[in-house]
Amino acid sequence: MHKSEKSEQREKRVTFSSELLHVVELKMLKNKAIPGPAQLAAYMAHQKRDEGWLVFFDTWQSKLKTPVPPSFKRAAGTLRTVVIDINPVPPHKLI
Image: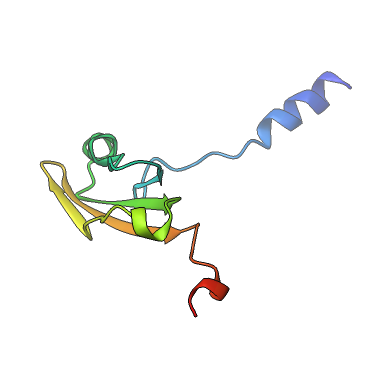
C-alpha cells in the first residue's frame, strides 16, 4: 500500500458530532438494583442536556420482575425509562 493510499484511508473515518440530540444509556436488569441513573445523570451534566433516556433490557422471569419508574428526577434533569422484556412468558404458559 502506498503512502497516499494510507492517508486516503485515514480521511475516511467516521466522526460524530458533539452536539447530541439524545443521551441514552443501555442497561441490563439482572437483580433488584436499578443500574444507571447516576451514570446517565453524569453524562447529561457533561453534555449539558436536561433530559436523558435509560433503556433497560429486563432478563428476569415474570414473577421476579423489578418495577422501574417511568422517570427519575436528578439535579442534571429528567431521566426517562424504557423497559424491554427479553425473557417474556412463553405463549403456552399463558393458557
